[in-house]
Length: 175
Image 1: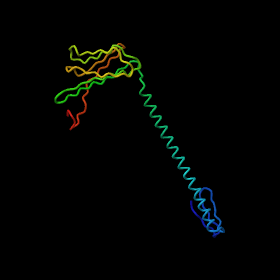
Image 2: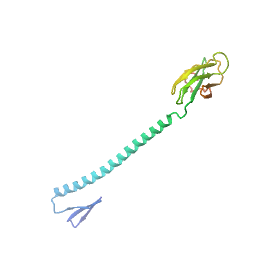
Image 3: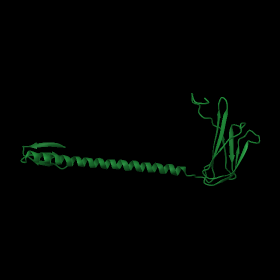
Image 4: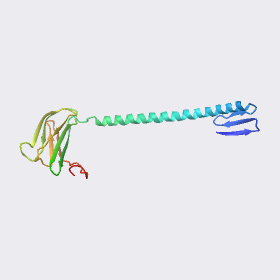
């Protein structure tokens, strides 16, 4: 936007559509017309900013919805029968703690789930009659268990995983 003065007859304001303010008007009428033009210009600019803000808001919201849908679709079980196990063994100075988490991540119920901790002995094997979809069970293995856990079920599922140890951070208990 710029202003152009021509022979003191009128002031021309150039922005999109040019508008001129006649000089034969009184000073208050000229300023009123001038401020009216400026106000219309600012309203036009604000509406384009508002439009741009609306596009950003709707774009961000649709992106968030798409991301949620992707995570939801990825979390749906794809196999009928599947097991996830998480064996953990934490050896500390005075004692050792162990746990095994068994989870059914399939769509169907698993039956006769057998957890073999290895190492022999009467406590080396644990049996679970059934495990519903999404159900998790936390088990305590015996002290003489080996380095891995094997879980089997009647539906032909067999998973073997080695015990993992948690990260030792200096200053924390057990490090």
